[in-house]
Image 1: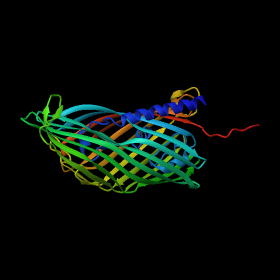
Image 2: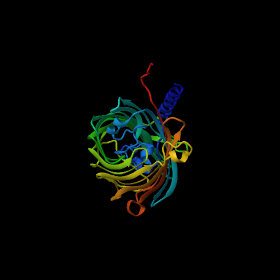
Image 3: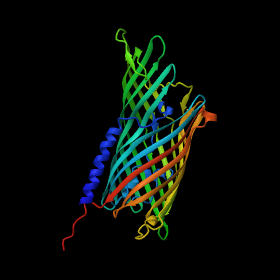
Image 4: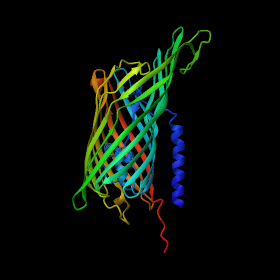
Length: 421
């Protein structure tokens, strides 16, 4: 009972910090000025260490996953999870080079088994974030804010070896941008502030078949139905006094120009399919392919302004993930390192953004560990992602990054019937 109370306390604390973190800047990237910002992967930290491979997996009995809701049918233990991410980036453009870092509490998740054939999950994560600060002698451009994502999903085994899943998603958040022309006789400022909301639905499937002794092959797929994210708010353009450190105060003797903002981000149908092969609690390897039609924007919200010339347009998105894990001996009593989960993966992504007339690509290698905690079936998961977004020779923009992810997965058997003898 004490262990369960401690788990609840951990989750309450994580939810508190998630609420605080959601109001702060989650990323630092010039490209987050595009659309609704930089979109984060849905994969858990353990899955990120496997190249974001998440549509299939054979280690879902003890820890909860939410990317493919059909995998929830495998859940056998009540599970809590919380994840943090630290990103360090070196940015290169034709005009400048700089480095930055950011920290994000990326998701909280709670999963409960529904008998022997089903599972339910509820969670909160950061869907996308805006975070940039460009300062030159005559121009200042700043933006921050997040779009958060609440999700609830259920997975159930319809018949032997075949499961279906359904997930509902709610998006909400707020974004603020400031653009200022400074160090002139009369500085001018444009302030924009708007809220974002939307709904989407995900449908998933999983099929498993034993092909040799304990070796199981898996086929997984899911689709996100097309949906819209709407944005609405206000803008104000005014003459300002500059007091240094990019602080601007409105000249109250001048009448500002105010207007309303509205717009829609239209997201096309997204499909993901994957194959996997492995032995439960011993090893697993798989690959997946994702695709989605080009994102489109309408309205007067999604205008981008840079201090360097970056032209953008949009095309279909695609992604290939390859990864897996090895556990030398999960139930070893004497050798702790034999119980550790060793993960690795690779991903190649066409981001769907065309930057300076060339496709913006993302390529990364991933590595990770799952460290057992105590006597329970709980883990501290670590993932390292080393990659490059864009290419200076093609996009006139390049980000070289190292992402460190940390998550805690606390699992236990709840709601167990007591036997009286």
